[in-house]
Image (cartoon, rainbow, N blue to C red; front, side, top):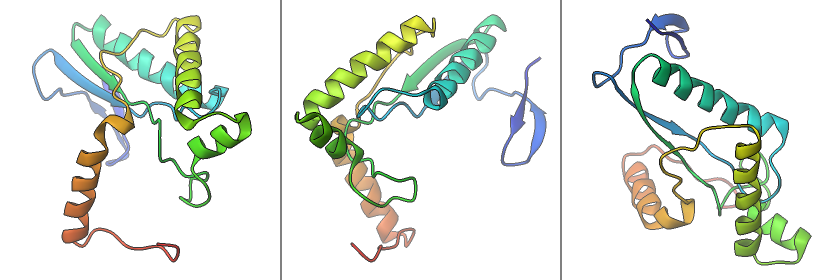
Length: 150
């Protein structure tokens, strides 16, 4: 039996999968504007540990980790310049070149840490139309607000 901390209920609870013996996992992956630091890598190690525990306990695990290759603001308060643009300015390259270089470095880091690969690594840039449609739905439902700078 697997028990996990449920951050919503703030309780340790028995793990109950939605589908018998099959689990889907999603992890927010890196923003590929620079090398990942130990704090970033900690989450990926934890994600891998969870996959391994589930696998060890007989679950089939399908895991997805996104690659943020565009549109991440410089602070966690959602202000400032886009991190990809800052990386491009710093290195005097295009944002695409910066993203490709640091994505490759990220995958090398995963290998060095013996982190098992995920099943799928979607790029944020591949889903911009879908993201815009979702934002429009959230706006129509009244779940959004505008910042002073628009």
